[in-house]
Image 1: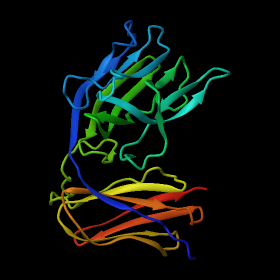
Image 2: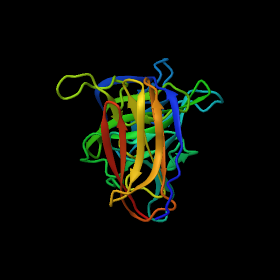
Image 3: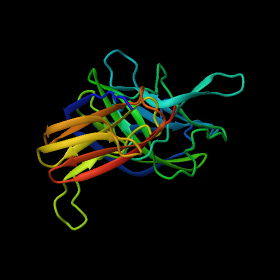
Length: 281
């Protein structure tokens, strides 16, 4: 009782640029680090990064192709640092699930590195091998502006990574969901026009903050609130009109809440939807 969830919402024009590269597998690149599969998010023939395997098959590395001021590069990825023995730390991108939010509220960013290791020798600490389709989240600098994107990959075994597709949000510093290809809101199961898209909550479990987004097909009055496991409302995130054609971003702050399961409920004039999230302190 008396707990408060802090919140912030933001609306931004969404314009996702999507590229399908038809399942390209990267293996045994003898020319690394300056060769490999080019990833050109914005399609300007100036790739922001490579995905490459060293000749011994020891690791996959993400390389920025340019380091000069103002160049188009990837300058951070969602991930963690892992130390091997008494050696140095290696940056590993997270294996994200579809719907994970990649954007300004992201806290676990690896910066200051020109490369990230996906696997090292036979070690797979993040869990890419055998996980099926997973996503790597990227922060990009394009024409001097910050953008967020994802790359979908599958690794069936060490030494064979398949790149499926990738996308980035053309809006400056606007979040993107892993797997969002910019497709319009899908029709309902009975073929009627789609009404909304409520994203997954990320991270989940979280401590102390999490974020999610809501997109609606038509402008309408919408209520977005958080409830505890007993059905008691602990916060109102929005009450009023939301516009169509934008991604509305929300943040949950669980600093003053106890650990437990919470439910986010979004109710509009045309829809009702819920997502469950766990606060773990």
